[in-house]
Image (cartoon, rainbow, N blue to C red):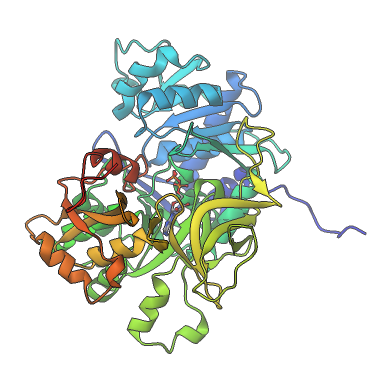
Length: 546
Ligand code: ADP
C-alpha cells in the first residue's frame, strides 16, 4: 500500500522557486571581476535564471547537455547554477586553476556544449578553445560594453546580451529527480580526472543535511560567505542550502586574500564563512598583523584538509569565532561529517572540548561510514584502531561519469582513500590520506599529526609533512615549513618544539624552509608537488633520498 501524499520531485528548480517566493528580498552580494560590489536578491536571481532557461531552450540545447563554467563565486554563476540545472541541463563547473591541457581533456570528456567564463579567464579560453571540440557557444560573463573585441573566440557573446534578449517567464520543466544536475571532476591526483555526476535528488538531500543544526546550521538569519569555490564541488552545496533557507549570500569573486575577505566580512556583516585551512590562515595572518577583530563573524566551517588545532583555538579563543571542522570529498557532494558536540560534551573543559573539535566529526544522517582492515573486516569504534574509511549514502557517487563497468563500490561502500579512527561516540578522525601516511620501521606516522604540531608554533604559517626514503627505517618524516611574514624560527628550535609533544620516533628528521607552499587547484597544500620539488633532497646523515 502506498502512502497517500503528494509527490514532488526533489528538483533544483524548487529551491530557487521557493527562495523567490518566500525570501525574494534576501540579498545576494558579489564582489565582481569588474572590481565593484554588486547587489542582487533571490527575486532577481530567480528571474535571471529563468532567462537562462529560455536562452538555452532557444539554442535547442538537449536535456542533460553540459553547460560548462569557468567562473569565480558570484551572482551570474549562481544564476547559471539554477538556470542550467533547473531547465534540465547539467552545469559542469571547470576548475580554472588546472593546467589548460587538463581543462581541454575534461571539457572534451564531458562533451561540453556551452562554455561561460569570467573575463579573468579569457586567456585560458583563448588558449584552449580550438581544442575543445564539442563546445558550440562561448559566453563571457559580462555586459555588452565589456565584451572583448578581437578575442579570437568564435561567436563570443556577452551574458547580459544573451539573457537580456529573453523573457523572465519560464515554466521550470518537471522531470525525474534522479536526473543529472551538475558535474565536477576530481583533481586527478592519480591518473586522469574523474567526473562526479550529481543528481537533483542527491543535491537537494545534501542541501537539507547541510542546513541541519548539527551540520552547518544554515538559516534565514545568516549572511554566508562561501570562500570555497563554486567551481569545485558546488561550493560545498552552500548555494543550494542558502536558497533552501533564504540565507543571504556574499560572494568574494576573485579577491581571496586575507584583507579583501576581512573587508567583505565586515562590510556585509557576514556571520558564517566557509573555506579550506590555507584560506583561513591568510585571513588570520591579516587580522593578527593588523590587530583587527571581527564584529559579525560567529562561525566558520573549515574542511578540505585537516584543520590544525592551533587554528581552531585562535579563532575561538582570540576572536570568538566557532570553528566547525568538516570532512568530505568530491565524490560525497561533499559533506560526510561535521564536528559538532553532543550534550554530554557540554560540561567538558575548554581543553577537553578542543580534543573533540579537532576530529573531523560525526556522520550526517544520509551518510554511513565504517573503517576496515586490509582484509576488509570492520574495525572497532574505539578511537584507537585505524583503517580504510568507507562510506555510503544518498549523496555518495556510485560510479564515475562515462566510466561504466568500473568497480567503484565494494559491497555498496565507497572507498574514500582516507585512513581514520572512529570513537565510541561516532566521531571520526582522519589519520591521513592513505598515500600520505609515512611508514617508518613498521609503524605508521600520521603526517597530519606532525603538521598540527608545527602549526602550533607562532612563527609557522604553513607546514606540510612528507616521507623521505631512509636506508634503515624505510621512510622518515620531514616537515616543510613556510614562516609567517616577519617571524623567525630555526630548524633546531622547531625540532626542539616537538620534543614535549611527540614520541621520539614521530619527530621529523629535518625541517626544510620554503618561501611558498605549493597549492593545488582547490587551495590545498599539494604534497605531490612538494615531493617533486624536494626530489633531490637527502636526509641528514644519509646519502639516500630517492
Ligand atoms: P581532491 O583534493 O583530490 O580534489 P577532494 O577535494 O574531493 O579531492 O578532497 C577530498 C579529500 O580531502 C578527502 O578524501 C580527505 O583526504 C581530504 N579532506 C577533506 N576534508 C578533510 C578534513 N577535514 N581533514 C582531513 N582531510 C580532509
